[in-house]
Length: 318
Image (tube, rainbow, N blue to C red; front, side, top):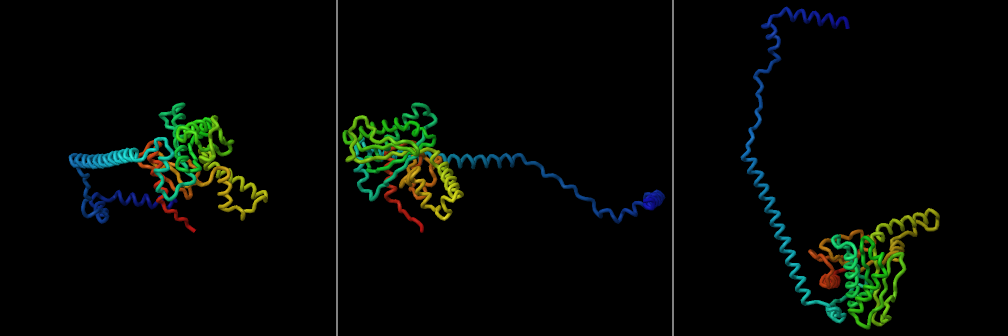
């Protein structure tokens, strides 16, 4: 460390003895040959930037206008199509006309399922009345078409909380369609006692057919799968069930018994395909139908769904 300080002092002493010309001569080999060019920033061009922004805005607005026109024309087309169907096909609360509308179909679903919801703007008693009326109308259409099983999914479970009232409303609607020859009616829900032949008039007749209506909610979907998985796991840990015995057939049988069997056709009365938590296991092979731009329960949608189901090709893999 002492030697280093001595060398530094000697160097400083030698440098101080040199004049400015000799110092410049020593540094000259290390200086750049040409002075560095200072890069100038490009000048802003406000006019060009303004035109570019306006061009983007015009293109964006044009795209939105074209898409809006397309949506309006599509909605108008579907409204006109629904009006035409309403003139050509309407049940007039007559089961004979419903059977006449589906006479040419090669097959019908034996289990039909629908997804309904209470509109937020129709909350309270008015929303419940509208929901019950929709369930009753669809039940009458199914009974008139000869579909023996109808399952109605409503996410919040409001229908399951009013199962007795639902039975009464559906029974009255069936009387308005069938008169004295009303098919027997059964309203049921998973883990809730069912209502069978609860018609107060006593005029229900098994010769006119039978209609089973199953009410579902969000709790009958993924939660049921979770509970079944826990039960099978506990049984396997207690050596009551072998892991080799757990198969797709066993799961399907348990879910079909506790909730429902897989429907043949699922109808969505909304404009989009939204299952809203519908039981996932039951829609593996189900034909799903929805009418674009439709926002309500209608006989025309019900009829088009049956026609679409009759023409569908079922290809099951091995």
